[in-house]
Length: 403
Image 1 (tube, one colour):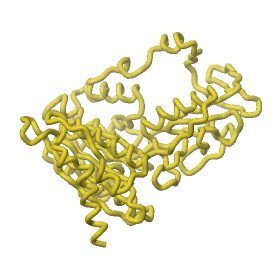
Image 2 (tube, rainbow, N blue to C red):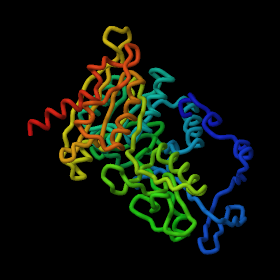
Image 3 (cartoon, rainbow, N blue to C red):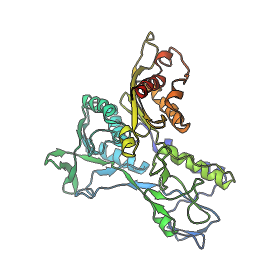
Image 4 (cartoon, rainbow, N blue to C red):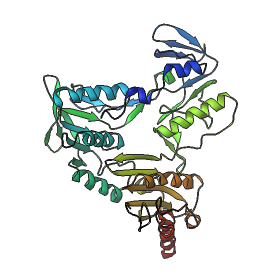
């Protein structure tokens, strides 16, 4: 929406859809919840009684405690109205100089979409506190490909840099200042450094809250009877580490919403935990990841084996073949696959991250991955002898023997 590629109406459900499904849709803010009286107070003063309550209050962007965040032209992107506001701001006075604080997939996707729709118009600077772009998705040796690629596209990539001040004049942003003393001109600043859970109603209800949000059991039930919670406001368990994580991605939110409905309907289906599989497209590069990066795995106490394989989108004899790279991470002790990363010049191979996700959920080992047989077609996949998941496993098997 920021780049004008999609509209608000194209991504929102019409009110009539809820009415047709027999749902009473109320447009108002819930300002208070009482677990003892089983009532929710709305912003218009009404009180709504409930038998069962589901909290899906989401999360809000983190705003860093630095000078200038309240200046005109400083934005965070979380909702459709945010996107519309940013789009209108950019179009007014033909603003060109953009500074994006944070090199996660939201900022990079916005930047590349804007640059793609208006070639050579925007002057883009990306500033990241950590050492490389997409730090939650990719390890350093994979991320360097993206760093070089975006630099070739004209982006000024400033990694391992800290913004200490957003500069303003007459109430409007004019630049940012780095810890090094460097000042960068800006007509707009986009902040994307994380989100925090919206927990006001959860605290009203006296719900148990963990490090990353509302604590729930496998059935999304909270510590208070008849109150459930799902989505970005909920603390989740990582499938691999078994530890608590935020897991604030679209996939877990959708599945938790469906599971909550099933629980209310009487089903006993457990939420399996998250693997944080995600994907993004930046210009002609498709990037995806799942599970643990090698860096995070080591921080979590895993001793790892990793392998990286270059493959191609089609058989070598077919015109239009494009390269892609797969990295797999294995736990040396159990031999289980615990993470994967993909960078591809073709859109199709990036969805193999979901195959890796299924292999993680199935707790498959190196030996078992060597027998994975994938569908093959000259126009749709690499030669079976170059299927990278099995080649990664073959190479990992050899590394195991070397220990």
